[in-house]
Amino acid sequence: MPVKTHFRIVFRGVFDGSPEIWSFSTKFGRARPLGTDATLEDLDEGTISAAAAAFIETSDFQSNVKLTEWRAYQIGTDGKMEGDPLLVDLSADPSSGTGTTRAYPTNVALCVTTVAAHRGHARYGRFYLPGPHAQLDSDRHIATSWLDPVVTHTVAFLKGISDGIDLPGEIGSSEMVNISNDASSTFQVVKSIKVGRVLDNISRRRNALDEDYHDSGDIDW
Image (cartoon, rainbow, N blue to C red; front, top):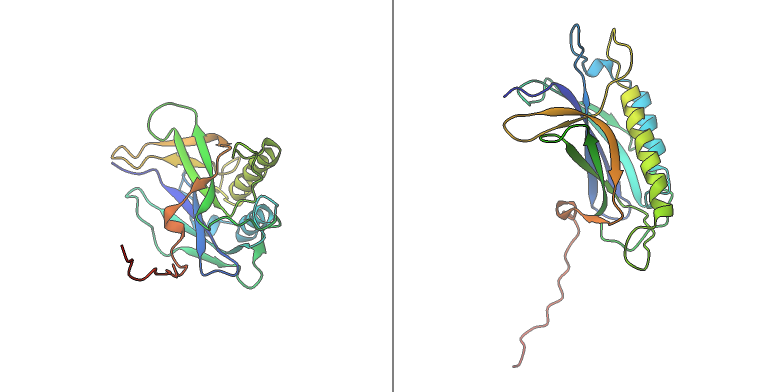
């Protein structure tokens, strides 16, 4: 089944003071109702970089979370990348979170669920924010007073990406999309996001820290 053409935009960074890296990706439409689909040349690097920097520099993220680059991939109807990706290196002046660094493992993340209008395939998508500076209540849920601004900041971030994607000849900006991973490759436009009050876990994120095992030696039973 053909895939809806789209841009896949990946944001990457590091946990300062650690070899661990983080990344998360978003998908935005590049198709025009009339005419040729948008290409990587239609992305405004400055607008997208500014939106990402403003997001990371909130207290939603711990101070050791640094944004070092983003990459954009032009995906065709076969689901594969067309041409070379756009690589934007921000490592010379990385943006950092402004929240207090918590003693959380680097694989602790905050899940953002992207919600489309219709039931079935591609109703939900998700991406995981690294290094959340989350204040937990006594029941281990995230405090609502901390979480509500995160939702607002995430929407502003996603709208900033959208504003940085120019669909030539069209009125309005690109929309975020969910695309199913099954054979149907269904896509739906994202209508809202939601963020739960429980911290999540990304097992693949801990990929560089030395385990540094301490062995008991032979146990004399």
